[in-house]
Length: 84
Image 1 (spheres, one colour):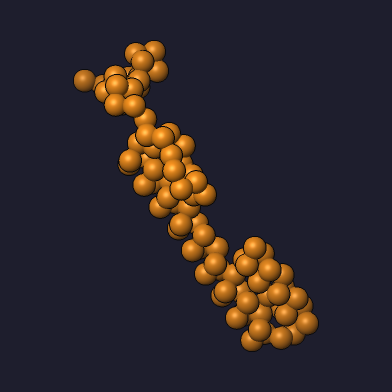
Image 2: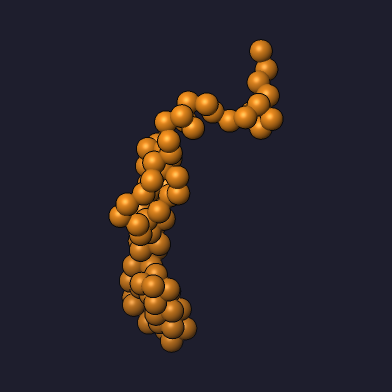
């Protein structure tokens, strides 16, 4: 929400000729967007590494994939073909 609000502020400031405020709002918008993308990306990566069923940023609990399901791997029908 902060990124969208500052984007609107930056565009309005740029349209009215306030270049300093437009630059400030643009920088805040870009920093907020990059921070949000970084948080989401690292959360998904950590959930994949820990073998969580569903990557979730908002849940404080999750179910881990059962050990037998991790050991058995993918069925032969969908395993990628490997060159030997």
